[in-house]
Length: 128
Image (cartoon, rainbow, N blue to C red; front, side, top):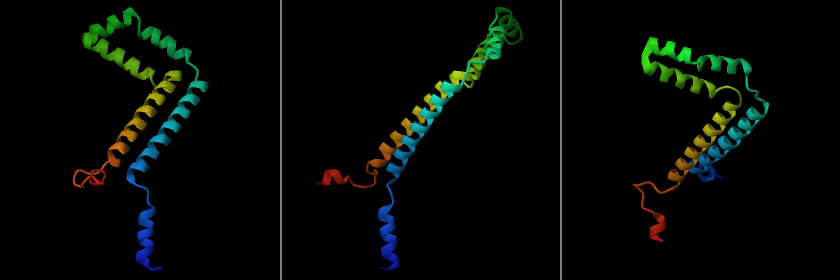
C-alpha cells in the first residue's frame, strides 16, 4: 500500500463537517440539560439574597435611585437585579437549560446549512 493510497483512505474516513457540527449540538444539548437538572436538584434558593432583593425593590430605594439618576436609572437597576438573579439558585438551572437548547439549535441549523450543496457547486440531486 503506497503513501498516496493511505492518504486517500484517511480522507475518505473523515466525517463531513455537517456531521461533526451535528454531533457537537447533540453533545451540548445532553451535557447542558444534564447540568441544568443537577443544578436544579442541588441548588437552594438563598434567603440572604431574597432579603437583599426585598430591600432593593422597596419604594424608598427606587425613590432614591430615581432622585440620583432619573427614571432610566430605575429601569437600569431593575434590569441589573433581574440579570443578576439569573445566575443564582434554581434560576441558574433555567438559564443553563435555555442556553444549552439555544446553542444546540444553532449547531443543528449550521449543520443543516452545511449539509446542502455549496452555491458554486452544481446540485447533484437535480442532475440525477
